[in-house]
Length: 266
Ligand code: SF4
Ligand code: SF4
Ligand code: SF4
Image (tube, rainbow, N blue to C red; front, side, top):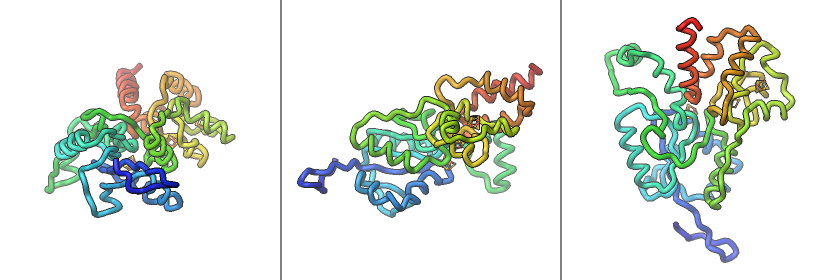
């Protein structure tokens, strides 16, 4: 740790951090840079030594690594292993890093070679199944969302720096939605993954009259069976539920099981 700054004579300890991107839209990193109102406060907490989206300097001397994006190429897997070796703490940042994110939608195609040909034509590139970073390295902490919420990231970084425990909400988005006094979208005939998705976004989508798509992944003990029943009772086509469950990767397995059941005619 570097102790070059002091406050009231007390040395300030600022951990060195790096931000890294794998296959991603870089929207999560952009969230950090966008937060101009609190950017200076944030920078006083940490010493950023690697952040391609925001600076030219680069260093492998960091203690906390924030990794955005999913792994879809061999070189990304290798970079990730190096990041893991360098960092004491590895943080998966955003749905892509935590669950595969929107990138993992391509995993639904059985023939990835066909997909590559369709997308890249005569200019082939390596592109494997999209996987979360936890499939390759130990992850110490996850920050959910697509994109992440900047306020949440700042709160988590503050706790990391102070050595405090970090607890994610273990209740669903519905709790926040009810606290915000929204009309339930199911009552308007729209599907919503709020009952099974981990809270923490302050019911961002339902508050803006859009059903939740599950970007923060499943809440502990998510009751998918109950959600299926609600959807059936409201005569909402199962495909509309599946579209949402498949979108960000957090519910990939549950969605696959549901699809298999549908194919089997159950
Ligand atoms: S989680 Fe969403 S915003 Fe963040 S990198 Fe992935 S696609 Fe972009
Ligand atoms: S709109 Fe969605 S999040 Fe809100 S109460 Fe209904 S199901 Fe829950
Ligand atoms: S409501 Fe759902 S999809 Fe929207 S931000 Fe929150 S968790 Fe993500």
